[in-house]
Amino acid sequence: MSNTVDKDDKGIMHSLNGVKRLKSDRIDLYQQTPRTKQLVKIHTADNKSGVFQSVSHNTPITTLESWFHHGVQKKLQRKIKAGQLTIDALLDLHGHRQHEAIVELESFVKYAIKSHSRMLLIIHGKGFNSQSEAVLRPLVQHWLSEQNSILGYCPAQPRDGGSGASYVYLKAVK
Image 1: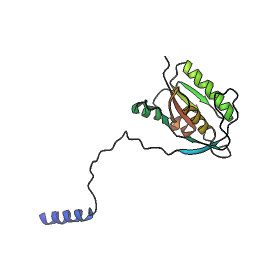
Image 2: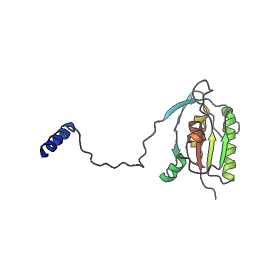
Image 3: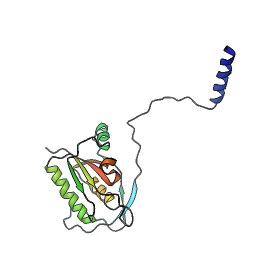
Image 4: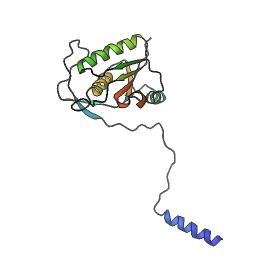
């Protein structure tokens, strides 16, 4: 009986030849991998109110799929990304032109701040009907990243629109 055990041990050790032992078998669940930035070309109309600065034609704008202010805790970021927070207000920008979308977005965020909303859902669409890349999503993300009242944004969960919508988290107003 001990003879067959020795043969099995030698066979296992032979099959593990070249396998290196791990230094640690623990995984850092909180480690974030850096997201690659995508360059997107957008065209905007002149905004006479001066709230959104006009971007010249074919100017590349760097957008991120998700962004959070460095003060937002990791646990809260995970809850936002998972869609676990109650949505306080919703804005649907389907069918809007770029200039109209920015004006609507600006007034929506101002209203949300006045009404003490924290979690917003902005539906901008995926850009299937546009002739080139998506237009509203990078425009909305760029505008959001320039606002002081925004603590973060990320793509919504599939039940709320997936990559065609964004969760937006606002600062608390006192």
